[in-house]
Length: 455
Ligand code: ADP
Ligand code: MG
Image 1 (cartoon, rainbow, N blue to C red):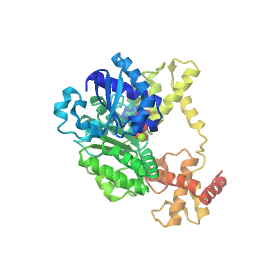
Image 2: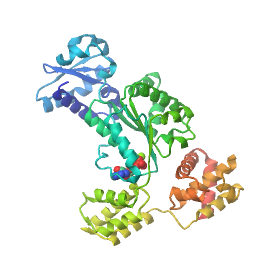
Image 3: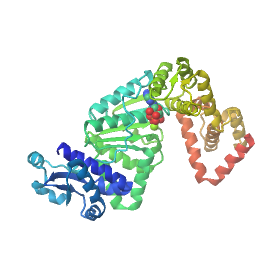
Image 4: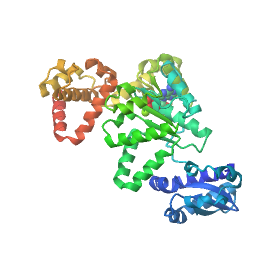
């Protein structure tokens, strides 16, 4: 394809993305491909004859617009289907000779919606001790997807830049090659898409599989949420194997290491370890300062040096929290028309952030453990222990849930208060109860009863 043809097609995709709903876009547009433009005629390959009608009635105005905008002429669309492809004249004169001999179906696939967030790049990802290895592994994968580390597995606590790195890899690959089929997807959306397709029947399921089967780069964010999703797990396992065999790049993130994904099947977890697994740890003081300096460049006000350092000192959990505080400072600065941020303003912003949330640090975790213990007839010591009979496990999870819900303590601190469990265990327990509450009316009542006692 010539540069103009590429530009024309990209414009068509852009226009239709705006004029169509996501579902029609995915079904009718994303599966189409421009083959050539000759004599003001755009030859478009559609997977099925049934899609022709839709293009004719709904999409031709976008083709016209793109034609006038990019090629300065009226473009007419002609539709062809896979069975027509044997006619070599359909391929552009320059590629025809080479391409017609080794036609593989992926050549007829159009770019898909990658879901990438273009604002996450390597340039604006500040490197520090805690993320150095993860960043360089990501750069290596972005330079040569499918060859170096497959899969690349990035893990670490919340707000440390995992999603940012995934997108940076995707954006880099996409920029180097606009036709690479790249998909960023959260585990939650993956599960939803799979469940919906399964519900809609075989045809939808085939489309779902087709989409994943032809990817060059697949990025699945927060893979720990695959836990307990039996049939989705199997599907993901198959996609993983297909892509791996074809040397297509897979990148995964998780809040914990593969070894600690205890509730996922071994066959999956061992595959996660085939490539490279890297972790990200919280930024040290210097890195926090560097990140802040980078992020305040574009703001309308200056920071006093000690104000930056004060902020970096106060917020040491993760980058998302740093950004949150910056947003508050931004708000105060614009409300009060400030052009210089002092330590006092930072302190005020941090205060408004913590008092904004109706959490009460005043309830000690110990107190929550006691109340929960009383309710379920177990001791605080048992709650903190590693024993796992069902009644104890529930009491422990409820206590962890309430500690997160009712206090300001970090998951790390809560973990410590529960016999040295790690933050991911805390998160898991919290999420588990949070989900259960919606399904289990009696649990909900139990928890409210305990809550009321604590207030
Ligand atoms: P995670 O996926 O690990 O929970 P995110 O990637 O969503 O974390 O990061 C949270 C926020 O912090 C994002 O806005 C991201 O751009 C920013 N961020 C994280 N790490 C860095 C970094 N090293 N440099 C610049 N921004 C960062
Ligand atoms: Mg994330």
